[in-house]
Image 1 (cartoon, rainbow, N blue to C red):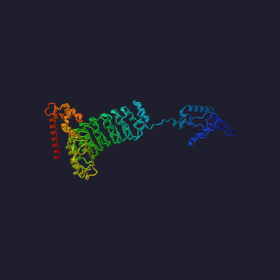
Image 2 (image 1 turned 120 degrees about the vertical axis):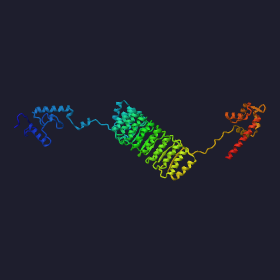
Image 3 (image 1 turned 120 degrees about the horizontal axis):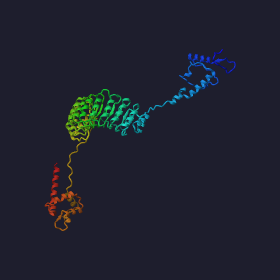
Image 4 (image 1 turned 180 degrees about the vertical axis):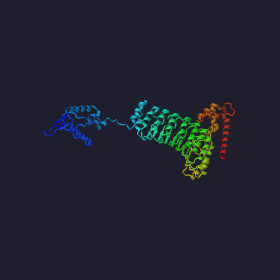
Length: 529
């Protein structure tokens, strides 16, 4: 018997037993409870095609706890549900649809950069788009400005390829420096940072120095040519004193550091424990500032190379360097070129070289140390057999014979020593005197086989034995004797003894005799020398 209220399902083949909707429901429920797939039910008119797969996870229509329905109501319900599923995206949860709807993520960062350019109102730089996946991004002279720097910074936040970032000469100013600093707080892949010639000023210095104390991946930093002054020196000194930063190479050349800046930076230089190479060239360190820098170098026990060329150390700085080299036993390279160091200052530095056994390279050229200063340094090397000096640079310093001989002696014991200087002094030779105009006149007369009287008669047309200055000048020019105006003037003054404006024959003869006597005397003096 069938259950009241449940319409029996007629079998498609006669002879098959009658089955009710409730029996199928119970059978399916038992299968779900047992963990097996539901048993397929026979298809009646209006049922869903077997090829159609429908997922109704979480739908009220698929609940196994819904009460049974009559055949007609169930058939209409199934058709209605099918239509609803076709109209709803949530009815079909296939993998194909998920793949089609998923938005692809741009791992290159190009899309992010273009969007950032729109936001900051700048034109995207094609060079950046082409090279943002390189290990080195060299973008010098692209005129980025603060806004362009902000756009690039946004794209570099998640960049994992670039290890060296060079944005030299892009006039980033303080705001651009802040944008780069904010990016470096997130980016932990960049190890070398070059921001030279960007007018960062004290504002940019503060931002960059602050992030360098947090970012321990950057070990090479170039901040040259950024108009840093004593205000920026405060932030840099704070960076140098910090033990959290890992910078090993720092370039601060070409800035506006003055005497006060030197005193500020000196404390940081003395206490720094990470920097191995420091460049302070092309600044304005003078007097007490120069002395303070030298003392800081002497106290540091980690620096290997220091460049303080093109400053104004002078005598005071040279004495401070002497003390520093006596104290420091770590420094290997020192460049003090173009620092107004005199010969006396070079001798003071030489005193330290007598005992120093770590310095390998000393560049002290383009200073007025003269031969005496260079010679003093050579003598110091001769006294110190343990000296490690391999390179001596005396560029533009002219040396004498004594120095040349000392250099040969030093090189006999140190054959690998490289020395550069401005060349040896040539032997002093008297400048070759100009030919006396009277000598030219006499030479012409001798070459023509003439006598002096014959030459005079060619000019004395009226045979008065006296000729004017103009007649004499015309005669010399007609003869082809090449005399300048000055030579002609000197010759007329020499011959016209009485100054009457005319030259007579006797004056010409006397002039000739006097000239021959002077030449004979000069020849005798040369032979005696």
